[in-house]
Amino acid sequence: NPFFITQVIASLYQNGELWYQANANRWSFELTRLQEISTDASDIIQEKLKQLPASTRKILNVAAFSYSNFALRSLADWISMSEAQLLAELQAAIFSGLIRLILSNNEGKTASEQANIRISFCFV
Image (cartoon, rainbow, N blue to C red; front, side, top):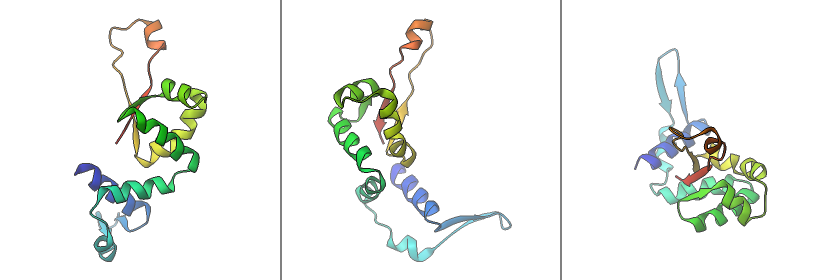
């Protein structure tokens, strides 16, 4: 599972258990830590969620009702928050890799259509 591998590597690096040795031009890691890693992706997701601020977790709980994708504007309306405030609240989830921005194709759209772009996210 690519998501699982990416999350494990990121976690090891963030915890200082995986590092790059420039003088040897290689990556090194703590073998004992690798043996302790859960093989269940849900454990990794739960750990990442625990690290988020409580307010961000509440927002993600509401967003989860929209299945895997949610629009910033719609979610802001659902929780009575401005889009700017909501985006600020979601930053931790974005940086943790739990959600990602969905980019829309603006090719062939007028300037006014591009100004009303729907900002959406999806759960990873």
